[in-house]
Length: 121
Image (cartoon, rainbow, N blue to C red; front, side, top):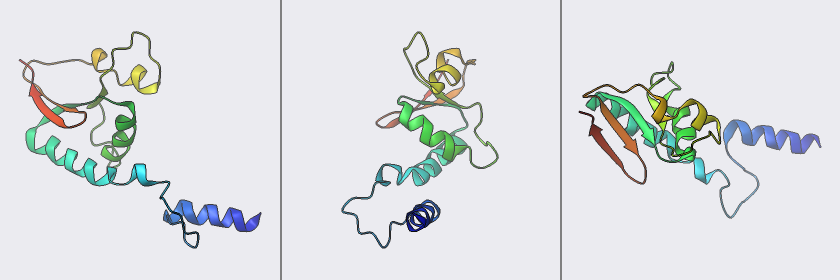
């Protein structure tokens, strides 16, 4: 039991499953989000983006973490595009783009399968 606990602790700290040789990395779905979040951050800063709208809940959960790791840098800029009338999850209830304040002329980044920048007005 102690050995298993130590192995889980080591995996949690390092992200490595060594000495276990896995055919597939179970953490593979989380790889690359930090790098992509850095690119999104650069786009936000370069284009003076006021809001980032994510089309999928899975994306907003990951990117909200990475984009706000540095002193909540993009707090109140991240939203979820949803057509749900009643919130089905935390992000639909608290980050719903429909409920956000909008300003004429603001630039919005929409992130889906690919991203696009639109300007309202």
